[in-house]
Amino acid sequence: MTLLEIFGFLRFSFTDMLDVLLVALFIYFIFRWIRDSAAMNIFTAIISIYVLRVFAEALNMKLTSALLGTFIDVGVLAVIIIFQPEIRHFLMRFGVSTRFGSRTRIFLNKFLGNEDLPMDNAAVKEITEACRTMSEQKTGALIVIPHQVSLNFVVETGDKIDALINRRLIMNLFFKNSPLHDGAVIIDNRHIVAARCTLPITERTDIPPSYGMRHKAAIGITEETDADVIVVSEETGGIAFGHGGSLTHINNINELKLKLTASLSSSDKPSAKDAENTKKA
Image (tube, rainbow, N blue to C red; front, side, top):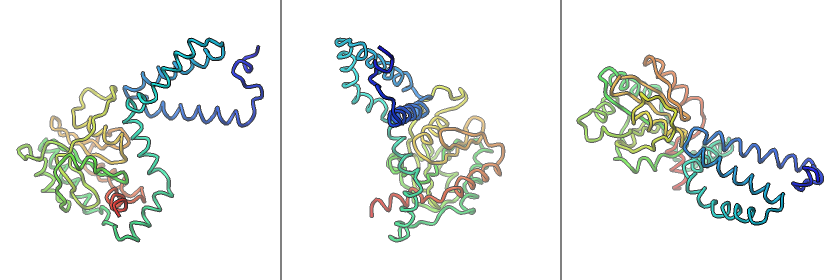
């Protein structure tokens, strides 16, 4: 009995090869999404159980195969619960990754009149100058700027502001004696949408020990959405810019302006606010 006969591949056709390739790619991308999370060990255990079941079925070990099959069948619901953050992250990324979807939303926003003015250089300057002053004064700050993924689930955890971007307002929101200083400020287009918002905390264990809760929250929200985040450390006054689950230390305010401007101009996607308006319409 050959290895091919054991696994039932009597004729290894092009379709079989394509099937194996797709499964391999699927497992590879899942591994990439969860490799730095606490779910990695669980994912490895699930794959191991499945491989053992395949071998048990191939060797006609009926009792072992049935037992492992029960674990797998019951584990489907458990996997959905355990991997809920990763699944949500994947679906949000998948929903905004296609150019067709982006073009469609842009057309609908224009057709329905739901367009909002995008963030311009003046707004970027107000944000960065506020960060400069807060850095000099060692005032802790956490600013989130969404792109296409709606942050309504975050806005609902805080207090709505709905004011035009202004450096003095941003500084007052993060002033340590302000009732709204504890949490994140959400800025979409040219508006300060909300303050005192609660962000998801990253589960990664490889982040630097010098990072506080603001940095962990910044990484967490950029892991789950396509937002940009600016963090000002209360202890050191250092500024960090976050996107895609990583933070970059900012050496000077001009570097922050360049990063923020490049991030905003590199995408032709509609804003999160526009996307939400389209959904409601």
